[in-house]
View 1 (tube, helix red, strand yellow):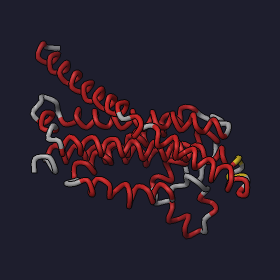
View 2 (cartoon, helix red, strand yellow):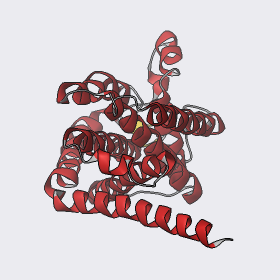
View 3 (cartoon, helix red, strand yellow):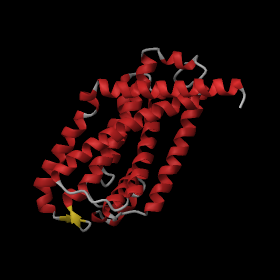
Length: 263
């Protein structure tokens, strides 16, 4: 490898680490806004749905309802925080005009995208770990397949981190930052099998639910814990991989065109 190539690789490595370290610092600096809310929310879900309503529901999919609920709540927190971290951070960079520092740096666009996505992955995994600890207070968590759990959470977090990046690129104000999470992400998550098995729905609703990608992600993750799923696990991973590739290409296209950044 030539000296110039080594220098370029060093610059890119330093740039990538700088973005990731900055994102980590941001997460920890406002930990009361990034980590604590999910712990409080998941506690309320376990108390209300798991303990009070769960006693009347009984078993779900052959498992105690709280054990069934735990993977769904973990994945829900990963989804919302992976998305929220990137959309708020990148839009904040646009709004504060310091995104220009990245654009004039010798960093390729894929490094910039990867750095922000890694920030979303960090927050998603950290919050997921917090919710897992909360879940252990209310129920026993059984692990059926560690590899499936890790793969599902990483791919899902990457999907929504990329989605948050794309939302931030298009957004021109804070209302547009909040529109997608409020009117798209939240409904899809609540109808994504977090709280119930899709087998409880009438046939027509089951067919409609299959078009919801979050249903497949949640069930793949739950399969890693309980060994049961309402959907094909292979199909779920195919959807996740496709979404990661498609969204990354979309994000790169927007960055290369300067959409929402150089306007």
